[in-house]
Image (cartoon, rainbow, N blue to C red; front, top):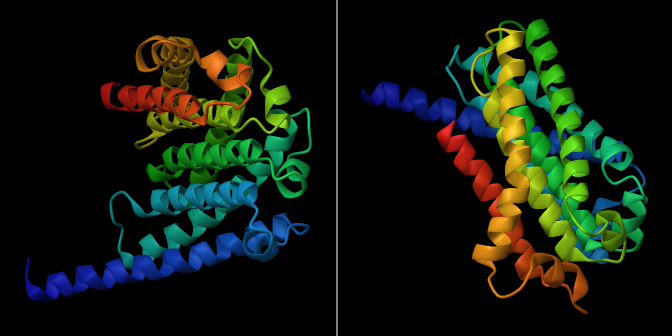
Length: 289
């Protein structure tokens, strides 16, 4: 590579970074517009609300994944690349914020998430909302990163993929709750952070699996449906297996359920082991399939 080509490459890199920073600022503005009753600076600086910090950082991780999806892939020229980056990032931001709202409606349905995070400073709820933002960001990374031809069709596939991802995350939340001997909502409302950590691991794991199924260029709908269905079913089958693995192999001498819900003080470390087992299993699926 010549000096001139190197300079052009660095110029393009700085352009991507500059636009990404602007998009982060726009993402923050969109978040504030969709959460008008939440004073971000007040919660972060004056109240030192750790539960909100989890949720807020999770949102920005999701945002990072969305912006990253619009950057990776083959270049179509700097101007076109930056245009695509802006257009698809804005679409992703809108869908991400809608997802956070839907979280209240379809996953944590038994209490008010805003009240739990802002008023009660429930860190378990904040962690779960962060996990949902990350999981949705992973789904959108898979939906946006592939070439699908033109903005109209690209928007259609991204929105359909996002809807599929939301539905599958909802199914995962129900399956996860069914395989436990305790009620997630009940213990999260009691400020049990460990329960939130374990649940969050399962959501992020499914996000990774869905992303893996969506990565690459779009070919046809039957192929997409087949890939997503097969990998999602594999993920659901692995959830109880991985929890058993974490329980008996990674955490010998006790049980996850006892450590997480039956002790006077829930064992957050044990919950981290559980979350790791889910996410680690999902990464293995990503590498192997």
